[in-house]
Image 1 (cartoon, each protein chain N blue to C red):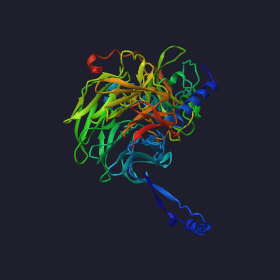
Image 2 (cartoon, chains in turn green, blue):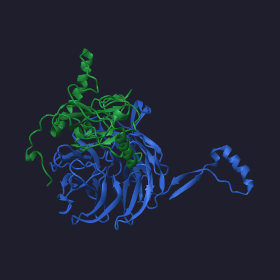
Image 3 (cartoon, each protein chain N blue to C red):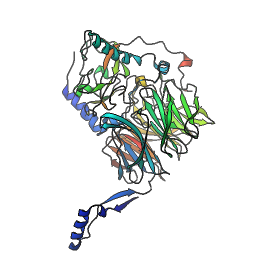
Image 4 (cartoon, rainbow over the protein chains, first blue to last red):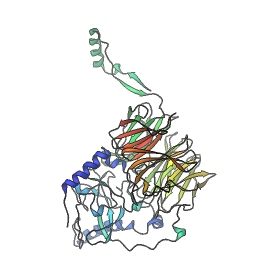
Length: 208
Length: 367
């Protein structure tokens, strides 16, 4: 199920546009998402940062083998509710950027000619239909001028840039022909694993 | 101060027209270009994340000029003594595609125009105001890279040469501190300090003990510089200073900016804190909200005395602000970015002095 409410979407866009003037994306430098080396990634975030990369490359392999292709905006066995052109859409809970769904693409499809970055940051969002938590991969689409529509900035579970796997504080156009930022996708990559046990005190210090 | 320089001789037609008009009883005007005199401490830059840098003077609200930066330039830093401004820039041969070339570009203060560049690895990270730093001594500039592997490029701006790249896995931003060194914030709740030798190569690397929890209460990745080091602030309002002494990182005792009646208030915004060195004041952008509202714009600025760890003032904005910056003159002014304008307040009284129409949001940088 998807609900379309163009008036509300336009209203949000107008609010955002007037509040931020022309800067929109400019002042939001968040992209949370990856640490340079596997060891460093594991130190902070478990294996989450590796998932989107594996997912993207897995899709390529499926194409190469002629496996059945699932449409980029239709997730198998997932019932949804909401408007992908709205910042309120459930998948966007930790998205920072402009919505590709407003720019000629969809929540999992880049607009024409734009190239999806295979490296991303991750959010964990609750699907209102089934109440489950899902891992969402926020892939930037790259190689075109920035899309000026539907700027969205939500920070549920987001972390600063030194914890990049959950950070939108950097442009995530990596591993693509051009790093020019265009817009951002929100792709469901699976159900979120159960919460990890709380770290031991010495591993998770509080402020002294 | 701004000076003008005549360029009548450049265009023959203009000179001929001027000569023809000279008999009409009106002194002919000549076309010229402004050249900047010495900068005032009240100058500041509005740096749009995907745009240029615009220079203004908070003292009178006038625009000074423009730095034509690339959309992917994270920030700029000025070296006052050399009259140079540094910007890490990514260029493409065909605007948004084609061959990529990353450079540290050098702009002249007088013209705000580029006068040189140094090629650096095509790894510049965008967009954050602490992705660039001028280290003590002013010879070396550091640029934060992400590919997404994290590293730092070191540039010798005095001799106009790229020195080398330092791997900094797990750590981000570059915060100049100590002798030819810089701090980084790391994903395991620590700080890392890297010191350079006289040639700009890494000579020291130390790591603090973990002192904050990324999971429970992360520190903003936008700390504010103090005379001795950097003041850090957590999402929940806990703050502490970190300094580097004798090659070691020293973390000061943390304290909360919230009093017993401040429940429900949190720091936030794109640029949540600034510092006034003259009176040792930390100024924080505050809003009412819960967990995960760390990027929410602030409705108030809280002025906190570091020496007593108490709030000594509150400034309420007419609309939420996304960034704060103190510019230090005889009378310190607090700048607040509100939509497409910058509101200028007397920091001591909280009285608004003027509104500068920048028509551009973004981060606020000291010029």
